[in-house]
Image (tube, rainbow, N blue to C red; front, side, top):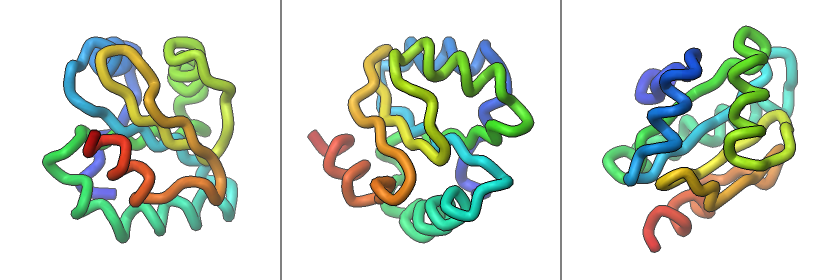
Length: 111
């Protein structure tokens, strides 16, 4: 996920919350095969998201406190894998497992 920024600090998360542009956060469990499948699907569609949103990748095994903070900050239940689309502190899309798909992300950020 070379086009994705690694999300690993609370300061980054605060910046995402205050961003008036779209942000996409992908919470990935490196120990889960479904999460790996979702990651592969996202990687195939990354080029269609570039320039439309800032993309963040969170290894939730390594950064569990950040993952918990994401859930709390955006008032979403923790799931893995999980994708969030945010803008100006609001979570506009929260999807997990096999519901994660680039076309739905594009639909939200194209509005």
